[in-house]
Image 1 (cartoon, rainbow, N blue to C red):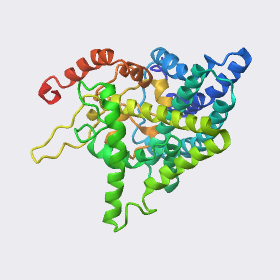
Image 2: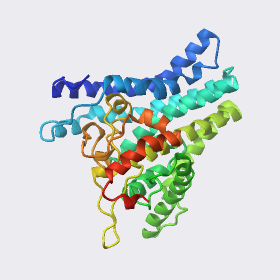
Image 3: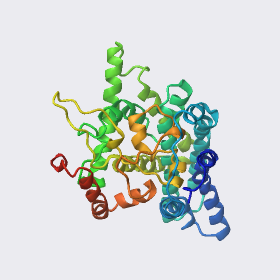
Image 4: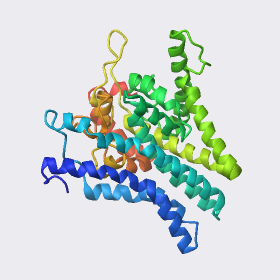
Length: 370
């Protein structure tokens, strides 16, 4: 659909279309009003969840792929310095905080059925997962405000350890057996998730303890940033309990679980079956775009701040989201992330679709996969 537009026009359309990330964050408000108007709170709480995982995959197919990469000499320097893109991500912090607190209020005061409560947690948790996408962008930046804004977003879903483990663990060990966030060939999602939850939490503490010990500090000192991020999560939890009781607390924990589970499902599909070759000296080859699955569907890339251009992100981790490039040479997912998350939930279908792609990509070195 977009392939015939001039390059500069497409880049301008994309710039303002990144505002679409606001849509999933506002859908819960619409679904709440719809439920009130219809007098039925059973189905409407699921609308945000159904939009992301039902409608978006269809729209991805209709709208198609993104045909543009920014010109490295003409576009990238200007776009990298444009404050619009930075303030768009920073503006997510108050937006998501308001949504989660309002979500706790609705959960505890509204006359939801049990099915409605589950739908509400799924929907707000889905939006929280999109918030983690923004946090992922922010924690990779050097500026104090951006890094810590990312940490605040992660604290809203009780996953502050991601800030440490992702930067110092995942990006170092990606696509190797040392990385719990890189799924191995023929590993199902349900085998992957428990290991990812536990290892990534523990590894964050190990990495932070190691950093502090090198500075001569105790891991239990206030210089341990994990104490601050998890402490902030406990404050959000305490606020929800104080104002809205046990139900408010259960909501906060429930939406957090959905959000960080979706994050780990995305980790699963981003590196499934890919590997970095081990060199003669025992070290692994450097990270290239070939070590991450790429997906170039236009709409989902707007919602996820180009997270689907994951190949370029791992090869150039400091590169800002607006100038990430599509690499046709990288392994390509057959659909956008929304569709692939659904597929990953059904292991037989996942293996049927993805295993042949992994095998074809490594056709001359299949022995690495077994």
